[in-house]
Image 1 (cartoon, one colour):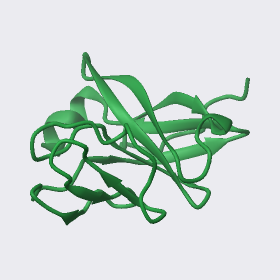
Image 2: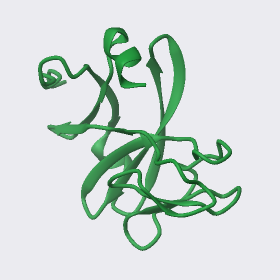
Image 3: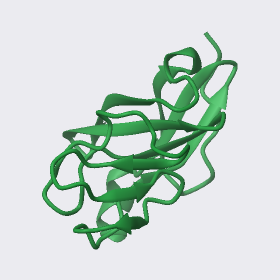
Length: 127
């Protein structure tokens, strides 16, 4: 297996989350990660061959964002109340959600997908 790519200095730690072949264009894959000692789900979305990672919880009522295919190429729709988020930015496109979904930087190296997670020291400063 290829070594993990280096994270930008001070930005966090890289975590391997999937193989690229597990997330075909137009699909979303749920992955579990450990963030500051807590298990969290991330929605890994492939929009036109580019991968994006968002917290797998709607900011309105916590519904799962990673349970669907992408809509119109780059949108995630919460199945609970139909809030829509742009997978590329986390921005709310349609309510009832108002707060954007938390996003994570993604890196793909030799067919392996990594996301950058905040280090415990950075986690508190990002809130």
